[in-house]
Image 1 (tube, helix red, strand yellow):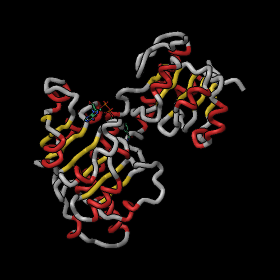
Image 2: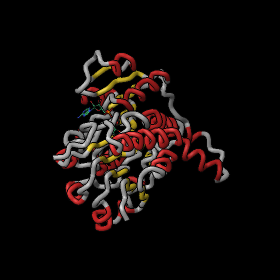
Image 3: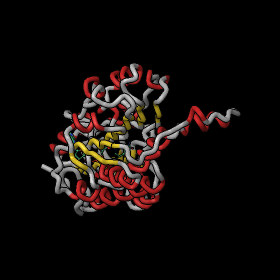
Image 4: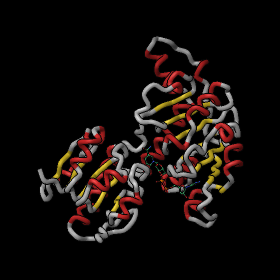
Length: 323
Ligand code: NAD
């Protein structure tokens, strides 16, 4: 079967249905799990649409001899070998901020759930207990939140945190104090050391890079206050999970709320048995609104590239570069 556009994960939207009226589209939602089949199927396809589970590495890029464009449904390009794609002249499209609001809102879903013991309180009522004394929470107003990575998502978290009356610090050495994300959010730029030491809440919004992998290790987690909450909705490997587990067990840290894990799905993980830990399965951006915006933005760009026009939101270059 000749395929123009191959979808290797669960990706459904009216924009993809519309493309199927003009291109040969194949949706194989489990293909990312079957590496040999994946390598075979990519040969000859012009476009790939992937989320974060498909490893678009050098081997795959070399197998995809007719590839012109990869559409990454989501933010965070760490599952793509950008170097190999650039060498082959393949355009990489992604939606720069289509899911930023959803992720920022999820941070507050986690933060308020933690502050007010919502999961345990809900369970208690269902189980017939009327235990109010165990569920005395804390207010966000007046607390300090430190945002690691004041980018598109971090900025939106900062704005929402200010609306709750929080003091907002941010660690982002790539931003100057005049950047609109700083001035419009009212965040104060600080060092990592100061940000971790001062915070009641730390919310991580860093991309996964060589510099950020394992950034929150035992030494840095120890800088945090013993009541502080760490929220990670960025990428799992930014936090050393073993060090986090040890810090929580030693009560050096007040709690953790994680949407992302070192390994996904995480399988058995010692963090699951700890109290003061809130977990969600990488769903920070999974709202109806964001899912539609993300897919339709990327599909529109893939369509542009396939029809010879430049992409609007690209990570490398707007049109394929064939030797
Ligand atoms: P962004 O690129 O707009 O912002 C990232 C910020 O981090 C930038 O301001 C950059 O200057 C800063 N930064 C980069 N390296 C740094 C370092 N070493 N130290 C400190 N700051 C550094 O990205 P974004 O759209 O805000 O997304 C942030 C991350 O969130 C993504 O990379 C992705 O991994 C993750 N994400 C997760 C979900 C989810 O569903 N959980 C959804 C979307 C994005």
